[in-house]
Each structure stands twice: as structure tokens, then as C-alpha cells.
Length: 93
Image 1 (cartoon, one colour):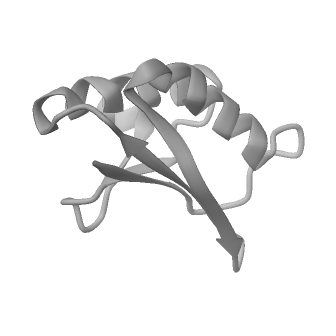
Image 2 (cartoon, rainbow, N blue to C red):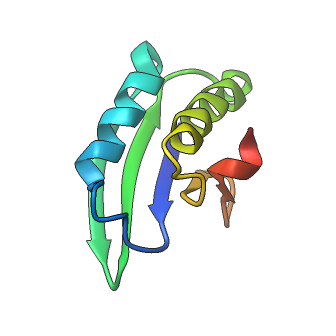
């Protein structure tokens, strides 16, 4: 299942998109992988492919959200493929 990790604003000066990707890789473990990335107009995103089923997706989303919040990145939006808008990591916990 696809999850888009969206940064609606630039990252802090001491963090880059690769740092966020590394956090997500650790949080995903064997349950998925980061498969792509992009940026433009002050926004950026990472593509995540989750290998678990729909029922386990919420557990994986909570893990991703927790690691983002722990690094003061709770404003990052997680958008599973079936969700047209997504929700900030701070609201998922």
C-alpha cells in the first residue's frame, strides 16, 4: 500500500529530506520501504510502499508518525493512497 509523506513547507536548516528518509526507513523496518522522492515550490514528498495489509497499515502509520513527532516534525503529512488529503503526524499519535 502506498503512503505519501508530504512536507508542505521547507525542512529546518539542520534537517534535509535524506534525514527524514532515514527516520522513516528505521520506523518501517521490514514492513516497507521508501521508494521515491520529489520537491518543488517549497514543498517536498517521499513515497513509501508499505508491505503489510490494510489492517496493519494503521500500526505502521503510528510508527511513522511517532518518529516524526519525536524529531519535531509533527507537521509532516502522511497520506495513505485511499485518503485524498492526509493528516499531520502529530494528529496520528
